[in-house]
Length: 230
Image (cartoon, rainbow, N blue to C red; front, side, top):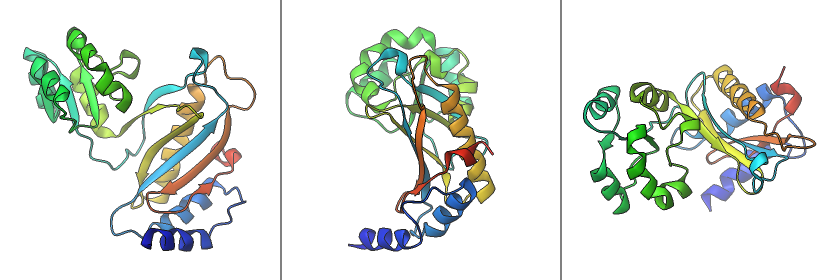
Protein backbone atom coordinates (compact mmCIF):
# COMPACT_ATOMS: atom_id res chain seq x y z
CA UNK A 1 0.00 0.00 0.00
CA UNK A 2 1.40 3.42 -1.02
CA UNK A 3 0.73 5.16 2.29
CA UNK A 4 2.51 2.36 4.14
CA UNK A 5 5.56 2.76 1.93
CA UNK A 6 5.54 6.53 2.41
CA UNK A 7 5.34 6.21 6.20
CA UNK A 8 8.10 3.61 6.16
CA UNK A 9 10.31 5.98 4.14
CA UNK A 10 9.41 8.84 6.49
CA UNK A 11 10.40 6.90 9.58
CA UNK A 12 13.71 5.94 7.95
CA UNK A 13 14.95 9.49 8.67
CA UNK A 14 13.39 9.78 12.12
CA UNK A 15 14.61 8.33 15.41
CA UNK A 16 11.31 7.41 17.05
CA UNK A 17 12.90 7.44 20.50
CA UNK A 18 14.43 10.90 20.12
CA UNK A 19 12.89 14.19 21.20
CA UNK A 20 13.79 16.75 18.54
CA UNK A 21 14.21 20.49 18.92
CA UNK A 22 11.44 22.51 17.28
CA UNK A 23 13.66 23.62 14.38
CA UNK A 24 14.88 20.05 13.75
CA UNK A 25 11.32 18.70 13.89
CA UNK A 26 9.96 21.28 11.45
CA UNK A 27 12.81 20.58 9.01
CA UNK A 28 12.16 16.82 9.18
CA UNK A 29 8.40 17.22 8.73
CA UNK A 30 8.79 19.58 5.78
CA UNK A 31 11.34 17.27 4.15
CA UNK A 32 9.04 14.27 4.60
CA UNK A 33 5.93 15.91 3.13
CA UNK A 34 6.14 14.37 -0.34
CA UNK A 35 2.44 14.08 -1.25
CA UNK A 36 1.10 15.61 -4.46
CA UNK A 37 -0.93 18.13 -2.43
CA UNK A 38 0.13 20.73 0.12
CA UNK A 39 0.03 18.66 3.30
CA UNK A 40 -1.31 20.11 6.55
CA UNK A 41 1.15 20.23 9.45
CA UNK A 42 -0.61 18.95 12.56
CA UNK A 43 0.32 19.26 16.22
CA UNK A 44 -0.80 16.87 18.96
CA UNK A 45 -0.36 17.43 22.69
CA UNK A 46 -0.90 14.88 25.45
CA UNK A 47 -2.09 16.78 28.51
CA UNK A 48 -2.19 15.71 32.14
CA UNK A 49 -5.92 16.38 32.48
CA UNK A 50 -9.14 14.36 32.69
CA UNK A 51 -11.72 16.37 30.70
CA UNK A 52 -14.57 14.42 32.30
CA UNK A 53 -14.10 16.83 35.20
CA UNK A 54 -15.32 20.37 34.54
CA UNK A 55 -12.28 21.92 36.26
CA UNK A 56 -9.93 20.02 33.92
CA UNK A 57 -11.48 21.00 30.59
CA UNK A 58 -9.09 22.68 28.16
CA UNK A 59 -10.76 24.75 25.49
CA UNK A 60 -10.05 27.97 23.67
CA UNK A 61 -9.24 29.78 20.49
CA UNK A 62 -6.10 31.32 19.00
CA UNK A 63 -5.37 33.36 15.92
CA UNK A 64 -2.08 31.94 14.65
CA UNK A 65 0.49 34.57 13.59
CA UNK A 66 0.75 33.12 10.08
CA UNK A 67 -2.68 31.55 9.68
CA UNK A 68 -3.30 27.89 8.86
CA UNK A 69 -3.18 28.01 5.06
CA UNK A 70 -6.63 26.44 5.04
CA UNK A 71 -9.60 27.96 3.25
CA UNK A 72 -12.27 28.24 5.94
CA UNK A 73 -15.96 28.24 4.99
CA UNK A 74 -17.98 30.29 7.47
CA UNK A 75 -21.71 30.05 8.21
CA UNK A 76 -23.38 32.92 10.08
CA UNK A 77 -26.76 32.96 11.81
CA UNK A 78 -27.96 36.56 11.57
CA UNK A 79 -30.88 38.69 10.41
CA UNK A 80 -31.40 42.01 8.66
CA UNK A 81 -28.45 44.43 9.00
CA UNK A 82 -26.26 41.85 10.75
CA UNK A 83 -26.86 39.36 7.93
CA UNK A 84 -25.76 41.97 5.39
CA UNK A 85 -22.73 42.79 7.55
CA UNK A 86 -21.78 39.10 7.57
CA UNK A 87 -22.03 38.87 3.77
CA UNK A 88 -19.85 41.96 3.33
CA UNK A 89 -17.28 40.48 5.73
CA UNK A 90 -16.96 37.41 3.50
CA UNK A 91 -19.24 34.84 5.16
CA UNK A 92 -19.96 31.91 2.81
CA UNK A 93 -23.44 31.06 4.13
CA UNK A 94 -25.79 33.48 5.92
CA UNK A 95 -29.27 32.77 7.19
CA UNK A 96 -31.63 32.40 10.13
CA UNK A 97 -34.46 29.86 10.49
CA UNK A 98 -33.88 28.87 6.85
CA UNK A 99 -30.24 28.03 7.60
CA UNK A 100 -31.29 25.99 10.64
CA UNK A 101 -33.64 23.97 8.43
CA UNK A 102 -30.86 23.35 5.90
CA UNK A 103 -28.52 22.10 8.63
CA UNK A 104 -31.24 19.86 10.07
CA UNK A 105 -31.63 18.49 6.54
CA UNK A 106 -27.96 17.50 6.44
CA UNK A 107 -26.24 20.55 4.91
CA UNK A 108 -22.87 20.87 6.65
CA UNK A 109 -20.81 22.69 4.02
CA UNK A 110 -18.91 24.92 6.45
CA UNK A 111 -15.97 24.80 8.90
CA UNK A 112 -16.98 27.50 11.40
CA UNK A 113 -20.37 28.62 12.67
CA UNK A 114 -21.00 32.12 14.06
CA UNK A 115 -24.22 33.54 15.49
CA UNK A 116 -25.49 36.87 16.75
CA UNK A 117 -26.83 36.62 20.34
CA UNK A 118 -30.46 37.06 19.25
CA UNK A 119 -30.21 33.95 17.03
CA UNK A 120 -29.19 31.52 19.81
CA UNK A 121 -32.79 30.47 20.38
CA UNK A 122 -32.76 29.06 16.86
CA UNK A 123 -29.17 27.78 16.97
CA UNK A 124 -29.74 26.06 20.33
CA UNK A 125 -32.06 23.56 18.63
CA UNK A 126 -29.10 22.38 16.53
CA UNK A 127 -26.98 21.29 19.50
CA UNK A 128 -27.12 17.58 18.65
CA UNK A 129 -25.94 18.30 15.10
CA UNK A 130 -23.35 21.04 15.67
CA UNK A 131 -22.08 19.97 19.10
CA UNK A 132 -20.42 16.66 18.15
CA UNK A 133 -18.67 18.42 15.24
CA UNK A 134 -17.32 21.16 17.55
CA UNK A 135 -19.27 23.74 15.50
CA UNK A 136 -21.69 25.02 18.14
CA UNK A 137 -21.34 28.82 18.50
CA UNK A 138 -19.97 29.74 21.92
CA UNK A 139 -19.53 33.19 23.53
CA UNK A 140 -16.23 32.10 25.15
CA UNK A 141 -14.81 31.32 21.70
CA UNK A 142 -16.04 34.58 20.18
CA UNK A 143 -18.50 32.81 17.89
CA UNK A 144 -21.59 34.21 19.60
CA UNK A 145 -21.15 37.93 19.09
CA UNK A 146 -22.83 41.06 17.73
CA UNK A 147 -19.53 41.87 15.98
CA UNK A 148 -19.92 39.50 13.04
CA UNK A 149 -17.40 41.38 10.89
CA UNK A 150 -14.56 40.69 13.34
CA UNK A 151 -15.68 37.10 13.95
CA UNK A 152 -15.78 36.30 10.22
CA UNK A 153 -12.44 38.03 9.65
CA UNK A 154 -10.79 36.07 12.46
CA UNK A 155 -12.18 32.74 11.20
CA UNK A 156 -10.98 33.46 7.67
CA UNK A 157 -7.56 34.66 8.89
CA UNK A 158 -6.64 31.31 10.41
CA UNK A 159 -8.14 31.32 13.87
CA UNK A 160 -7.91 27.86 15.45
CA UNK A 161 -10.34 26.50 18.02
CA UNK A 162 -9.08 23.74 20.29
CA UNK A 163 -10.71 21.36 22.72
CA UNK A 164 -9.18 18.51 24.69
CA UNK A 165 -10.52 15.03 23.85
CA UNK A 166 -11.38 12.24 26.28
CA UNK A 167 -7.86 10.81 26.40
CA UNK A 168 -6.38 14.22 27.26
CA UNK A 169 -5.22 14.91 23.70
CA UNK A 170 -5.47 18.23 21.85
CA UNK A 171 -4.68 18.39 18.16
CA UNK A 172 -4.91 21.04 15.45
CA UNK A 173 -3.61 22.02 12.04
CA UNK A 174 -1.01 24.75 12.44
CA UNK A 175 0.04 25.38 8.83
CA UNK A 176 0.96 23.83 5.51
CA UNK A 177 4.10 22.02 4.35
CA UNK A 178 4.71 24.88 1.89
CA UNK A 179 5.04 27.38 4.77
CA UNK A 180 8.45 28.82 5.56
CA UNK A 181 10.06 26.83 8.41
CA UNK A 182 10.35 29.91 10.64
CA UNK A 183 6.63 30.66 10.22
CA UNK A 184 5.68 27.09 11.09
CA UNK A 185 7.87 27.26 14.19
CA UNK A 186 6.21 30.54 15.26
CA UNK A 187 2.76 29.02 14.77
CA UNK A 188 3.75 25.99 16.89
CA UNK A 189 5.03 28.21 19.71
CA UNK A 190 1.88 30.37 19.58
CA UNK A 191 -0.36 27.30 19.76
CA UNK A 192 1.54 25.74 22.69
CA UNK A 193 1.47 29.12 24.45
CA UNK A 194 -2.32 29.23 24.04
CA UNK A 195 -2.60 25.72 25.53
CA UNK A 196 -0.46 26.82 28.49
CA UNK A 197 -2.65 29.88 29.05
CA UNK A 198 -5.74 27.66 28.96
CA UNK A 199 -4.40 25.46 31.79
CA UNK A 200 -7.41 24.58 33.95
CA UNK A 201 -7.49 25.00 37.73
CA UNK A 202 -7.92 21.27 38.27
CA UNK A 203 -4.77 20.24 36.39
CA UNK A 204 -2.32 18.50 38.71
CA UNK A 205 1.24 17.31 38.07
CA UNK A 206 2.79 17.64 34.62
CA UNK A 207 0.41 19.61 32.39
CA UNK A 208 1.99 19.18 28.94
CA UNK A 209 3.32 15.60 28.82
CA UNK A 210 4.14 15.11 25.14
CA UNK A 211 4.10 17.17 21.95
CA UNK A 212 4.44 15.80 18.44
CA UNK A 213 4.28 17.12 14.89
CA UNK A 214 3.29 15.32 11.70
CA UNK A 215 2.19 16.12 8.17
CA UNK A 216 -1.05 14.70 6.74
CA UNK A 217 0.65 11.72 5.12
CA UNK A 218 3.93 11.73 7.02
CA UNK A 219 5.48 10.20 10.10
CA UNK A 220 5.20 11.81 13.53
CA UNK A 221 8.11 13.54 15.25
CA UNK A 222 8.33 13.96 19.03
CA UNK A 223 9.30 17.41 20.26
CA UNK A 224 11.64 18.39 23.05
CA UNK A 225 9.20 20.48 25.11
CA UNK A 226 12.00 22.68 26.47
CA UNK A 227 12.78 23.88 22.93
CA UNK A 228 9.28 25.35 22.63
CA UNK A 229 10.03 28.08 25.15
CA UNK A 230 13.55 28.79 23.91
